[in-house]
Length: 352
Image (cartoon, rainbow, N blue to C red; front, side, top):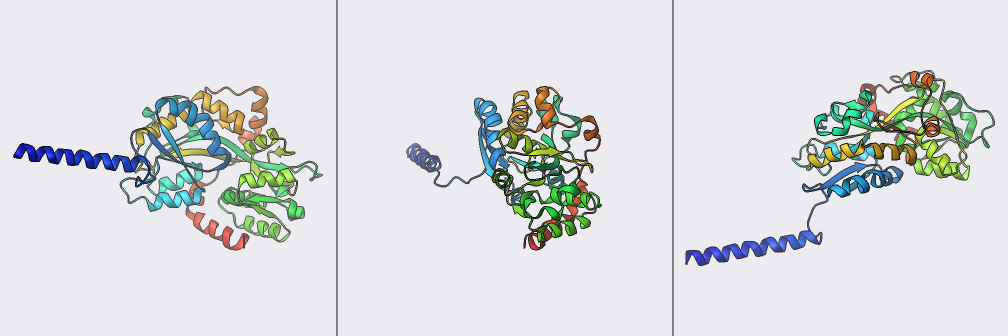
């Protein structure tokens, strides 16, 4: 009797497990979160960046290793807020988060990032020292420069002050999602510093009152350039190269104040469900082929020393030795402590 009862119980358990597996297979109850066993959830911006991650990393390098890479697309303010909200959970919903260097610093300061074990990333042996953070690593880098359409802007600008000038009226455009760097550009243009942006606020309000356009995304900004409703602004040099490749009439100039250094990288949330998968992705991200492809496709500089960039392309996406010396880095601590106030002013005052 005991044996018969055990057999019935075993069969019931197997039947229940099979039913649950069937529900999961059709997506009836499984949560949209990272899972062990080859699934890696990547928090990232949408648009070109997401597409090129798929093209140059996910498909050629992760799929052959039996990883399924899922992109959780969203703006970085929303994704940073999500990281904070999920901090108390033992398992979060992402394995990696794509952020700027300033935002990586912010998330680490909040205690949300897993310290990076570089021994688990073989390709890190080629990583530039300045791209190796204790809490994350740089994927690609460029610099914030002036861009303009020579057909619409007669006098070539040489400084941020020339670009962010109310005389341009509605031919001047800025980008909503780049509020941090735009505020710093404006501060430098107005005689401020990376840790004193107040002069920049006044300058941007003057430009707003003269008709300055605010575009929601990089892609929307590019459409404005293409239609020639927009003639001048500030942007990553890498994006300028990308748009030149697409046939848009645009030229870039390194400002006399110094181009703002920009690093795009990744952190691993402490409660990442698939940390092994996250490390596998970071290693693939630094693969020579992926780094070279991003230089060609997106115009960003590689962060590894073994990547080869053709001389003509390097001339277009890189910076001269003098321009490298003048690269301006953000004060990450200052930006972190004041980011909420900056965003509130941007949304409620500049955009109102």
